[in-house]
Structure formats: C-alpha cells, structure tokens
Image 1 (cartoon, one colour):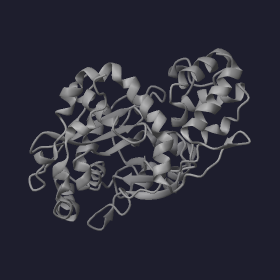
Image 2 (cartoon, rainbow, N blue to C red):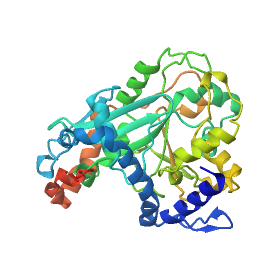
Image 3 (cartoon, helix red, strand yellow):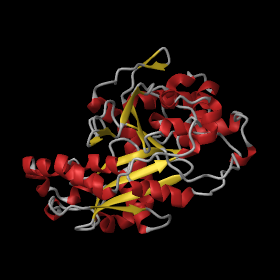
Image 4 (cartoon, rainbow, N blue to C red):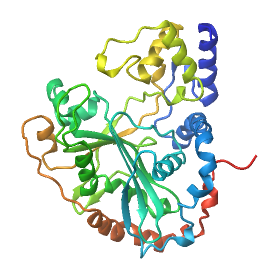
Length: 375
C-alpha cells in the first residue's frame, strides 16, 4: 500500500470511529462520557471478535455452557474458586472467549503471563477472569508512587505485574462480583501461583534469577473513573490505590484491521530502534510500529494520544511494598488474604445486600452472550 493511500485510510478510520481531528491531532473530549468512550472502542472490539471467530466459533456452544443462567446462581451458595489457566487447554479457550465480551478490546498481555478463571464452586460456572502480564518499563505515576530511580526499577520491575483484564461476567456482574474478582488479585493464591511459576526463572534479558515474589499489581480502569476499584477495602485496608489518570495514549484506535497495513509499511520503510539482541528482530512494541509509520507517511506520531484517559491503580501485596521495590528492604511484610477471607468480606458487604435489592439477575439467559449467530 502506498503511503498516501495508507494516510488517507488512517484518517478516514479515525473519523469513522468517532474521533475529531484538528490540525492532524485528535481532540481530547472524552474524559467523562462513558458511552462516548464505549462508542470509540466499538470498531476495535468488533475487529477483535471477527479475528477470533475462525478459532473459537466452532466451540461456542460448549463455551456458552460454562456461563450461568441467572436461575442457576444461588447467592447464598456462591463460593469462588480460582483456576489457573494452562496453555493449550479448554480453560484457555474459555478465557479468550470470555475476554471478547468486554466493551473495550482486551490485550493478550505481554511477556510473563498469569491467567485465572474465577468459578462458582457451587455450580462450576464462570464468574469472571483475571489476566496478569508484564508491566511497561516506564510509567510515570507508578514510578513516582514507588519512588523509583532507574537502577531500582531495573532491579525490581520483575516483582511487579499488570492486570490487563479483570472483572466479572453476567449474571455475576449484576451481583457486583466484579469487585470480588478485583479483590482476588490481592489473594495469597495469586501470589503463590506467581511464586511457583517464576521462582528461580532466569530473565531473558537481565539473565538474573527471579525470586518469585510478587510485591505489586498495577491496573487501569476500562472507562475513565472507576466505580469498581474506588474505595475497595477489606476491613479498613484499601486494596486499590488510585494514582490519577493516564495521558490518554494507546493503540486500540489502530487495531481495527489497519494495523497489519501499518506494520507492513513500517517494516518495509522504517528502521527499528536499537535494542538488546536477545529480544529478537523487529520492533519493540506496537507503539513503535505506529509512531514510525505515522511519521513516515507525514502524519503526526502523536495520533497515538487518543484522549481517552483511564484511572490508574496500584495494589500493594505487602505493607512495605514500596520500600522493597526501591531496594531499601529485602524482606516483604505480606498482607495475608486468602480467597475465603476476601469472599467472606465481599459476601456480607456487597453480595447478599445486592441480591436482595436487585433479584432481576435471576432472569439472565446466557444465550444473550452468544457472539456469532448462524448466518
């Protein structure tokens, strides 16, 4: 594809998604209107579903059977079960299928990954999903909160993970189980799973042995300010701590069928940044691909700033997480929350009052979650 043609298609695509452009830049008008933000993500979400159709549609009947009808959910009997997802398993298919029901495009995560299904032990139906992946190297608000300098960050970034997807699915979402799933990120079981998977693992780039200690989880809200994570406590302890808002940059608005053309053009005409040879050949990430392509075809590389700001959070898993991550202390003074402990608090504080107040969840039909109808 010629540069002029690709330039025109990118501009047309951005406008068709609902972005307003002025002087080659996206106007930032989307800080508080969640429906507008959802609309901006629509094209990227539909593209992701269409891309997944080839591999998942044939399993859809079986996958849907893992979701509950509202009549199958008994709030008094609900008991969460954390199931770690293994590669090339049915659980992995279910995780991927569930993630397609988010109103924003869900990343597949980067580098190290830990994925969990949260099931209801009473009926074995899916409550929600947790996906943890490698954090970005530099994140201003996180690094400021920790108090990191570059050397400390290099040394202990391996003790941090980012939640790239986190939440509940219907009908459990109607019972505020998104809060339960979020709380489980802080559980001993998640921390233990990280230790078992990554303890004594040698880093590809650092060539250093990981100690398997997960000290901090970061995440961002899906749509601006979060009602899910704000003031989420166990007793008096705040689990999710807000760091403010992102600058509103990313790649979702190019992940709509055009990214492959952008990559092909950049791969042909651009030079990738210098980096460690152990990463392999090619670009560092999607951000580099898009920015280099935009610059080459005479569009502003700051088109990666879409203006959709998301609230950033940290979840410390130890009382001295910051001191540990700064390298000032070598032992972690853990918070200790079992899945059962977290659920007991959630059950009394949110689940049972919500079920009594809004019994309509029982009318939910899982068939409404079907993604691909017969043509």
